[in-house]
Image 1 (cartoon, rainbow, N blue to C red):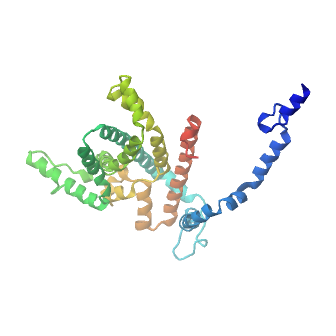
Image 2 (cartoon, rainbow, N blue to C red):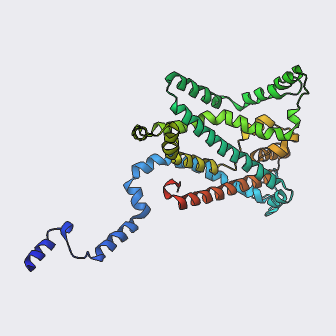
Image 3 (spheres, rainbow, N blue to C red):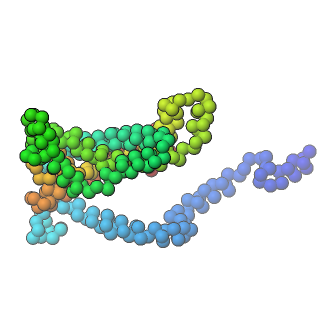
Length: 337
């Protein structure tokens, strides 16, 4: 009996019935920990070498310029160097906060970007789902091309179109209103009108791009799911609700995190080209990006502009960390890191 037991115990690690020695496992674990980054660099040196140009690019263009953050704490003077400007501490931030400028810019930037994210993703998902259910091949391609085309239109061209439509004297809108005997509308002197207009033009320009992303995700859903649902008697709305929408969750969360990462960076080209230097519309349309640009272009206040830009970056950084932490707590698979 003992001989059989000893023989079975010596047949190999896969058939051992006794407890495993702890010393060996702990030694392997310590060895792996000791390897660390040096072992990774040596083992994957070819991959890291291929990655090196990208790292150099970001180091030169993204990390070295971060030295300019020091301007946010100085009263910048063009006659002095970077570190010779008078240090004022948080004075620039204090002025932005006490003057109410920072609160207004933050609310405008967040409000517009939240509208862009919610409405943009909602309409993109709806368009992609509807287009995926269309059976006509030529109609599907034509509709996809028509919706995607505005994405390639320059914001400069868009501003020309908007001006020719809403110009008070000879715009298309007021010409139509006068033709019907109605009073013209001074759109460029009515701030509240630009809130829905800016959102509308953003959706018109970017809907096709977002729709293509969701349409590609829908294309990757196995057809077997839909066939099984049809056999079970599910109609088209049930298939969309129980198969298509849940399968788009991952794509939606990834796009949501990317959007939130730049939520404090407004669409500068859109706002600046449509509004320009029209001070009447600033209360409803001014965002952090346009304020920073105007501070540098008009007043040459580098310290104030850098303070606003630093606040914008820190706010967005904290926001993306918070949202990613919430998503990781809900479902770790959907988090970016």
